[in-house]
Amino acid sequence: MRDLTVLGIETSCDETAAAVVRGAAPGPGAILSNIVLSQLSEHAPFGGVVPEIAARAHVEAVDAIIERALDEAGVALSDLDAIAATAGPGLIGGVMVGLTTAKALALASGKPLVAVNHLEAHALTARLTEGAEFPFLLLLISGGHCQLLGVEGVGRFRLYGTTIDDAVGEAFDKTAKLLGLAYPGGPSVEIAARGGNAKRFALPRPMIGREGADFSFSGLKTAVRQIARADGFSRTADLAASFQAAVVESLIGRTKAAMAMFRADFPRGDTFVVAGGVASNAAIREALTRLCEAEGLRIKIPPPRLCTDNAAMVAWAGLENGQLGLFGGLGVAPRARWPLQDAPVGGSQTAGTSQKP
Ligand code: KG4
Ligand code: ZN
Image (cartoon, rainbow, N blue to C red):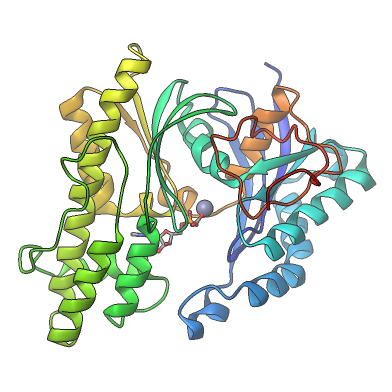
């Protein structure tokens, strides 16, 4: 297929990001620029993302971030083949800012718009970075999602397992809060765990041995809360390490179950992809790498800076959808909720009046 050059815009949570990528499916592609402005310091005092603050910060930053992304890539609007923006799922105020900006740019430049599903952008990142071939088994672990899916193609997903309560990133964030660790929780817990004894606290291993590949993390969080209360913060490192070990074991057990489902569906599928912010955790990466060695699967995990939210992944998802002609009209509506398995996810939807919020 012909190489495309696409601008991506990401504003669905607390990062204002813009990037330009060039390439063709199945990848890998070239990241010409990748600008991420984190709103960390603005949300840190509140211990979590405040939607109104996020939306306002996106409005203030998005134009300059896009300009920088184009500048660094050495690309003008007229050089682009398409403009892609996250259209959901996410905090609706933020999504509206990015999508509306993309529509304005598309209108002014006459370039087509691609409305990208943020989860599909995470899912396809391993194609941008390593050219992962379809079909692959995907473990998507982020702040809002925890899912195991068979990925057959762009917009073609089979759900094997999902969380019945909290997402794994959420469990990291809540554990960090309980332990008095800095926001954002995931990296703080990972760092604290390095000096800790993971065997000190016998925390539950949720869902292990259960049929299917669903996850659950709320019981684990409750167990951490009880120990943190009883023990004060004197055992922070041990508790962080014990929590992380429980998460790792739970993820491994559930992934193993999904591998069997994937093999049954795709006997020739040999690739396992990990995506989402939590995929930047080194202990989780190592454990999954060992699992794949034992199971005879090839593992592909994007580098940490492309696991957490960024716009290169949005540009790439836009590029892959664009190559299939899945452009959204300017009437595409932002969506707070947009499950991956609601095909088609490629941005071919038009007006938003009939869509779920
Ligand atoms: O994909 P992402 O940047 O945003 C969402 O789409 O949710 O993921 C953010 C989540 C947060 O919950 C954050 O605490 C978690 O990923 N995270 C980590 C690590 N880095 C980020 N969790 C565990 N270990 C990490 N190193
Ligand atoms: Zn994300």
